[in-house]
Length: 537
Image 1: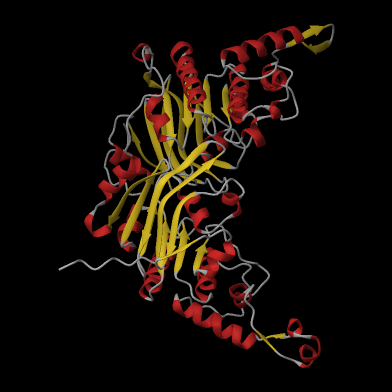
Image 2 (image 1 turned 45 degrees about the horizontal axis):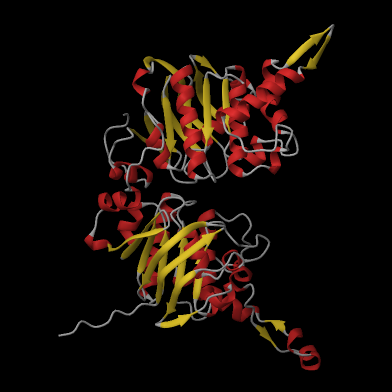
């Protein structure tokens, strides 16, 4: 007997997308059945957001050359070239960042853009645009949508001041109120919720799917996927890896599929065995360390980094890894105990880390890292001149800039780091992203630090520049004994260069792994599903 053909509410086949020569999707498939909860998984940069931008017809796709591949909704080929077309096809999205209007009531937020009206005397004279809002009908619709997901709240309450969990549910109610909704995308919906709120949300997803509405659940939390999803698609580096039924897999296999790849060493580690790493000497010690950095909160970490090692800090976006160096440098409010080479830092005093010979290359090179209108030379020497009094010469009672010394040093750094520029007088803002990153690194190294924190050192730069930056960090560590701490979303580069890698999940240290530990261990740790007893590599 012939097997019945499977029906799909959504089929995306062979989807490919290129941004300015960079192929971010390479023939991806996504198949969703009616009424199923389908998890879309992958590391940061795997291509999940780009795929959803294509599904929603976002302008960023169509102003950059469109995409390749086909999309079918209910078996019919469609061309989704605007968000309005996506809405007309019954595709909705619950965003991680809330799109609610604080001064409006729950009803007004649910019905905004789809208000119901009733005729009045003026509208009979001047046309439908003058009709009155039918608040009674709109409140009835709002109550129905709220009841569907089990949210007990009066529909006339103002949104401003409501708990985060309530806002998330109001977002969902607004999507459910739309006529003909068939597919609902949840983008990391539990990231901002408490544990109990997250459980309620998962239950609401089950209720929604039981009504025949398909859900695409974008998440990195494996425990939630196992609890609520029917099936899943895994992407890696813009490629389709697998489509799995949840009943046929387990967390270890999923973790391996998310992370697994050929281990290609990005750096030559010959000579790394000659390094002097003293297990007894601690360069950086954190105890109950917390940082209030929006979107990257650190919620209490204990960690010791040995003197002379290259230590990697990894984890998915928004889990707290970037908060660690930003708090140490005094850029965000931090508390707990931080010791540098045995001396305690004053976390309330901006610049205390610099005084303890700690340098930092920020992930925000345009906002924090560079003076964009100033020359490459000024960017490289400015901090060392202010902090260490370098590149200054004394003439009588005055201290003046030693132009010859500054010029010579800047030219040396440009040559060493292969900064592609027209000369050291070129404004830093005119450089490419990769070369801006190298200027940030040059400025940090000019401080002659004992300890160097580098956040996202290779973000937005090509493979050749990546290799050069990482090899130079390894060379500094090997030849000068500098303790180097690399914070990165690129697990591959951490596994290429670090001695040990701490994985941060939900603001806490999940575990410390060795570079050659299994893909499954890394996947489980990053996905918040680490259950291993070993905390330290």
